Image 1 (cartoon, rainbow, N blue to C red):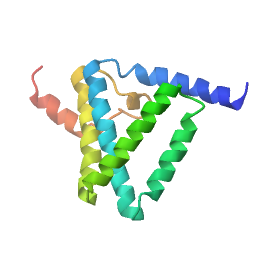
Image 2 (image 1 turned 180 degrees about the vertical axis):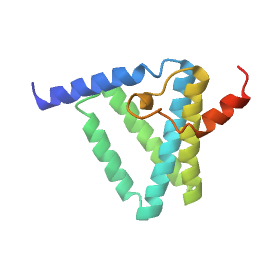
Image 3 (image 1 turned 90 degrees about the horizontal axis):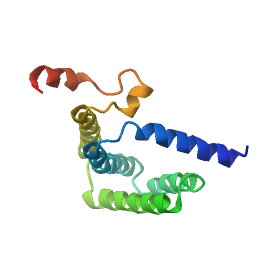
Image 4 (image 1 turned 30 degrees about the vertical axis):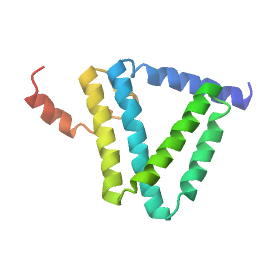
Length: 146
């Protein structure tokens, strides 16, 4: 088996496994909003640290090139467009470090709450101990009546 075939098989397997934990339309929609928001925070921090977007663009180029052998053309084009939007949004927002960190934290917490609210386990729970921050969940579950 060639190396590119094993990469494609690995992507297909990972994608199918990931998809098991993202079936609820509300959960999927919230991830479509929060994942780019978190990445806007990450890109903003990279800009603050490196003082330019060159490192961001290089990282995105490497990421996109790595996708070429593994994803269908339509997925690639969509990912390229989303990456462009995320960089554009980060440039327009000009977040300071605190704002960028807040984007990341809120995005993560909303994704975790989305899983909690829809009853779907997190994909992270399959490879970590618990799969979420967990500090607020115990507090919330003690006060919520469902």
